Amino acid sequence: MTLHYRKFKNILDTYNFFEFKPKIVVGVSGGPDSIALVMLLKKWITEIRGEIIAIVINHNVRKNSLIEAKSVKKYLLRNKISSQIITLRKSKNKNSMNRLRIKRFKALNNYCKKK
Image (cartoon, rainbow, N blue to C red):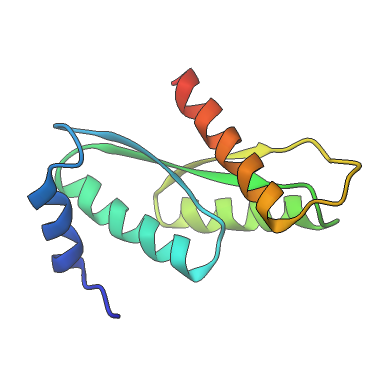
């Protein structure tokens, strides 16, 4: 399914998901889905004079995960999107994809509670 900006904007505007001049926090992995979402949100938030911050989670599972997170942050900076890296503690247990997903959601939730 192709999602054009007009359709994206129409969905957000029609359903009033956000208040006037919203501040939005969005998780960005660096994959194509999250990059597409953050770029669509950036365009929309700029038009309505809100703010966006992208959170990149360094899951600390692979040796180069911090390098990957910094690469995503650099890409976001080049596109004028504020971002922050949150580093998860390295776990001694083997992390399943589901467990890592839960840890990322908790980290994002904790970040939002602080703001």
